[in-house]
Image (cartoon, rainbow, N blue to C red; front, side, top):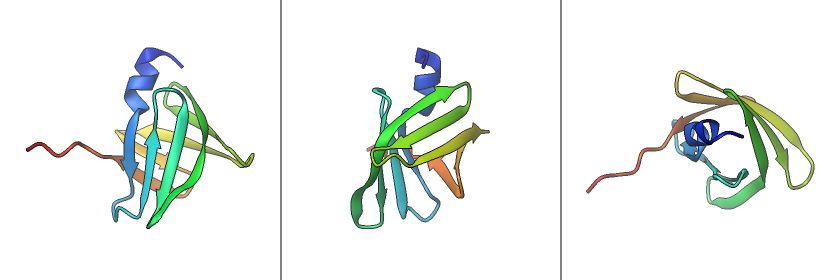
Length: 86
């Protein structure tokens, strides 16, 4: 994964209702929380352009694509979370 590809995906991505939160880390790992369940899914991901391939620590695989700043991950639609400025 190139630095540019990493910079475009790294961060917290959340569904519109905030129920699912997926942290994509710079080290190629992800951690997905669902509701009150922290680390519901963890694993690694790779990026090729705007396409993501996921491999869960249990071996489950999934894909995603970023289009117009939105992450479409299988049936989920996630938006980049912006830090709150105080």
